[in-house]
Structures are given as structure tokens and as C-alpha cells.
Length: 331
Image 1 (cartoon, rainbow, N blue to C red):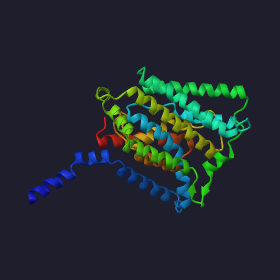
Image 2 (spheres, helix red, strand yellow):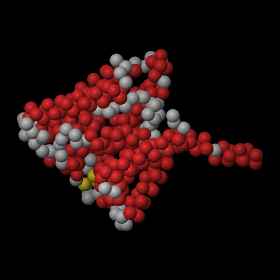
Image 3 (tube, rainbow, N blue to C red):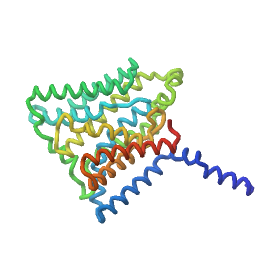
Image 4 (cartoon, helix red, strand yellow):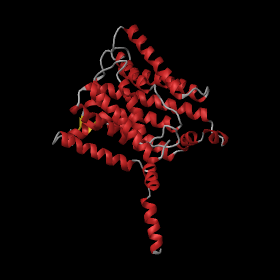
């Protein structure tokens, strides 16, 4: 290679378009750097707080958000979105709690919750895949339906729940060996399945194909409606699992328990590199996005009162997502 060729290669490597492509194709690099910066800020704000206990607490808090953001990642890759996940998650924890003192106990409660979530996901998938209703509309409507049924169930049982099962509290709050959150026993398998699903399976490649060019996918023989039905069922089941973990973490079961996580779950997926237009994204970046939002929320909880914290938190989410979009060339 001549000196002139090396100069051309150097200029190409330093070009803005090259950097945008690198950030778009490898979002984990800038996201990890941002996460490290936020951890440094935490240490500056509260010297000495960043230790094994703080890391365990942060990971435990981020697990639920990361699972819900996984729902958004799967559906957004297809060009859709799932606004029912927070309602389904709340339903899961609440319904399980109402079965604690019933025949079959909490195990039956979890089974009922997972079945109800699958039905909700099936209906959303049919609406989006078969009847071609925009996923935003059909999932928002399904979320409200689930919320309404939860309220009916609450009135029928004349209770808000008999208490969170001790097994879920152990899963959500306890640590193994004093440093490893027990909820990783749920989150790690979920994360591995989603990563392998998107990277190593034909179904995962089909999701990207539908999101990138649904017409071409259909012409190539892909039955898009079947793929969408399945992805919304998977999303609903993940949401139900997240609700069970959150009820154990908070030791609370209510029909609105997980609703505050709805928009952050979308933000975590977007910040993690998943395109809202479909066809691009991955779960690894979503996990880091969930960690970023969790650490950011912790910083703001120290610096600001609740009303101002929500304003600043929302503003920062918009700024980070806009910055990522600007530098990666997403439109």
C-alpha cells in the first residue's frame, strides 16, 4: 500500500459518515461509554457509593425494565410497538397475588396470569398481523382492556390481593452470596433466549425482514401475519414475567404496579439502538439502555425532588435518543 493509499484510508476512517455507521452498527460502544460516564457521575455525587452492593441494587432494579424493553425490541424490529406490556405486567403480579389463599395457590395464579397474557398477546397479534390495525392502536387498546378486566377481577374478589407470595419476594429482593441478585435467575435466561433468537434463528431473521421491507418479505413467501401473532404473544409473556419479578421486588400487587415503566421501556429500546421504523436493533443494546436509564434515575433521585426529576428525566431521554438518531443517520 502506497503512502497516498494510507492517507486516503485514514481520511475515510476519520470521516463523519464512517463514525455514524460504526455507531449505528455497533451501538454497544457509545452506550457502554455513556453508562461508564453516568457511573462516574454517581461516584462524584455520592463519593464511595459505587461498590458491589450498589451494582447489585442497580442490576436488580434494571432487570424488570430490561425485560419490558425486550418486548419493545422484538416488536419494534418488525416496525411495530407494544403499549400493552405495562398493563399485562401489572395484571400478572396482581392476579398471582389474588390466588395466594385460593386452592392451587400462587402456582395456579402464575399459570392463570401467563395464560391471560398469552390471550392478550394473541389478540394483539391478530389485530396487527391479520387485520392490519396499527400496532400502536391495537396494543394500547388491549392494554386498556386488560386494565379494565383487572379492575373487574378486583371488585369481584373484593380485594387488592392477598399479598405477594414469599417465593416472589425472595426472587425479587434477595441476594445470593450477598452480591448476586436473585432476579438474575430469571433475567439471564430471558436475555440469552432473546439474543440467540434475534441473532441465530430463522425466526429472528424474519423479524428483521418484515421490519426492513414488509412487501419484499411477503413476496419472498414469509407469512407475516403468523410471525406477528407469535411475536406479540412472546411480548405479552415477557411482560407477564416482568410483572412477577416486579411484584416480588416491590412487595406490592396492584393493577397499576408497572405502568410507570411503559415509556421508559420504549426509551430503553430506542436508546439501545432499535429503530422505531423497524429492521434494525438488538437486545444487547437494549440491556445497556435499561441500565443507563436506571442509573440516570438514581442520580436524579438524589439531586432533584420528584416533580422536577420527571421533567429532567424525560428531557434527557429525548436528548439522548435524538443524539443517537442524529449521529447514526436514522430517520
